[in-house]
Image (cartoon, rainbow, N blue to C red; front, side, top):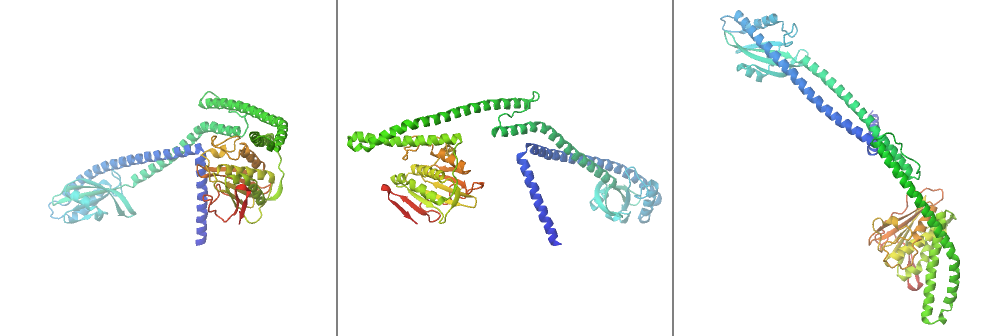
Length: 553
């Protein structure tokens, strides 16, 4: 039995949590829910306050009316009691026997017994007492002592109290007054039950509660209906804006009437038309720019080949030239190398923009690709005595990728890290899980400012145009790398802080069918804040000046 109760309590708690979560979601996402709920709460509070004030007013009015009628009734009964006592005990020294007779005669004369009749103030129970004589009446012993003191002092007083009667505890309005008989002062108490008043008050409370509840619900319904007229166009505008953001530029808001919502629709439609026109112009300009880049790249290929051949001939004979001419020949060949690299990147960008690039997927060991990329930047790393630290697993990491493109991505990332790492170590982290493989390249150089994480992938963008780059990059490497990552269905992300370095993370699916949901490597990787003390004992590939390479395990 206890297990059943515990299980029910657990289910109820789970249900309550689900309902709370759903309401919290609706509260955050729906303006209509927030406004209707707020209106419902405020109107309930107002109705509650008004109901309490109304109840207090009605209660006060009922008690005041009852008290006035009870005092009048007590005064009339006191006069009758005075006459009865004068007839029943003329000249007697004691009132003992006459009080009971006077009580019976008073009840018989007025018909005021609680069970036999009513008075002007309603039903009542009489109690008569005198000094030195036991009081008589059904509630003779239950008259409040504080009221007795006031009445015995000659004051007509009232008090509302609860007494134990025949049918249980009953609330009475007790009115007491004092009168003088032939022998000694006599006190008369009339106890008026407030049962009818309590019933009336209960009916009023129920009526106020029901009316308040109906009023709150009606008000919430009215607010909901009115709010829908405002929220519905806003929701439609939001849906149209979402479709507009996804590329459907034909959607427009329906405009009806001349009110504020109609003006909102006109403004939105006008804005959408302008944006669509600007996007069309930008697309035309972008296509023209891409076509120009592609055409120029292809047209420059032939003269570049001719110039390259002539330059190679001159470079091969440079020892026969004067020193100045030989140096000029070397500079010309270096600049031709840079120009050819730029032209190659422009052609690659043109093919990517045209969407004609295809992946050559094959199952390879990603660890071998990482090592090959590290070896390819050995020369530029040796110039700056930059140490490349490989934090890689011992076992093979197979994945279905285009090895050539992935190696090109890593070469660009490593060259960028060496170029901006200011001679500090560059850390390469390789991790994999069931669905993805991730490679992070971390440097500890100048870093990136806030907001530059996205700009680094723009074509020809540089964080500091005045910085002297050592690698002589074309400014297209990261843009090409991003497109190569997208071709694989992967991610290429950047992180950086000023003077703390930067980190680029490449995440690729291990198979073409896999869908990325998370990366096995953090951004930046755990433990990457201390380049001299890596999280694990990694394989170290150190590039030295003169091409000497030292590998440590």
